[in-house]
Image (cartoon, rainbow, N blue to C red; front, side, top):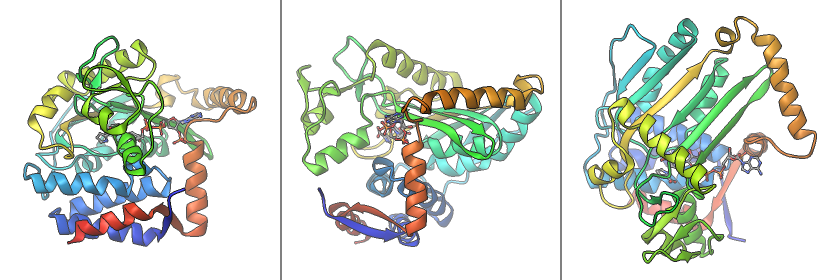
Length: 338
Ligand code: NDP
Ligand code: PYC
């Protein structure tokens, strides 16, 4: 067991803000990124919590990102909200577009927020969870970099391409899932490497196309999709929906356009919002009860709902007022302040 460092929630936000400001992000971007890292760390999402500060700092050092980019929302009469991140990190553009996305979903029944020209490093669940908080079902996806081989292939073509979904529940935390369509997120492989641990079988192949459990060989070779051809097809869908559909880059194109290894991918994002009341013809309450019966049938047999671990971690960390990260990670993060 790695030794742990305890950080209060204020210390998490403070450390993130200090590193981001020191790296060259303006106050608005630093605040948005620190807020995202704080939410992830609060829920013990280690691969996309404070650990992501290395990627944020490396992206700024690389010189392609605009750390002060002010997003623009294009005027629109349709159900599509188009946000241009203008070469900055995605989060401010998402924040700028969210209120209009929610408004349009309530008017039209469904709406989409597209974000173009953004660097992207983050988890997707906070954004769809916020939609559920507004009473909407939410779906979001992004490509990343071409680290993942398609089923039957041996070469990185697809991204780790996360898919996140959230469903609002009355008086309860929403049903939410958020996962990479690769067997492991790249961030998770990096954490295995830091901890000196071997990967499980089936996550990656090495440069020669042989199965490997060695994290470095996996990073140098190609990652594999989860669920064979099924995860591969979902990953291709994400390439299309958050790439050509919205006039933005695929993972392979992002890799060519973005900076050096370790920097954030550069591409687009799509977030879809659905209004249950409009879709059900005004019968959201009755259908809500049916959804609850579905959830009950799952948990009654001892299975857990996705996000149950996260919500439990959030409640525990809020109650005790601190989170834990590995001592080595905490030490290494200090170097970003030098
Ligand atoms: P995980 O494998 O950690 O978790 C996937 C999902 O499955 C979570 O919602 C999790 O809920 C749920 N889950 C896990 N175990 C069970 C179980 N036994 N029963 C039911 N549900 C379960 O996610 P990944 O490592 O694939 O992804 C981690 C993060 O990385 C995501 O937030 C993703 O957005 C981010 N990411 C971002 C990328 C980017 O380009 N920006 C690229 C790839 C990933 P719980 O959390 O409660 O355990
Ligand atoms: O963990 O695969 C990943 C990832 C890519 C970009 C941000 N996170």
